[in-house]
Image 1 (cartoon, rainbow, N blue to C red):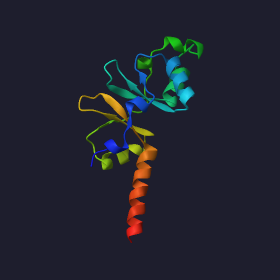
Image 2 (image 1 turned 90 degrees about the horizontal axis):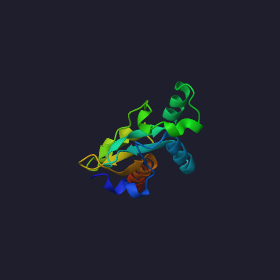
Image 3 (image 1 turned 90 degrees about the vertical axis):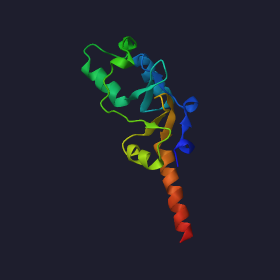
Length: 139
């Protein structure tokens, strides 16, 4: 069974272009209350995930950088401390469970690497819970 039934489609996901500014992504994350956001390029390919920690480390390690001048820093210039892995839409559920232990969400791409959405950790947990509940009711 593939993972399509767990997918939150791109149209319902907050993401950012890799060429956006640090300030744009900070404001977008703040507005939506997110701690991490997928990044895509101009062609729509998944480029990685940017976290609050990445933003804080960039701010700490860049002399004279403050909130006001974050508009001069491109997201592509911000080092990412963790490489969040994505999966193909053809992956199976078991393959995303391991990723979900260390990622809040798992980005999903099509066969050409185009970002098509995410699978949220909460949705994976609910899926597993429902399976366990069904098994218990059969006993």
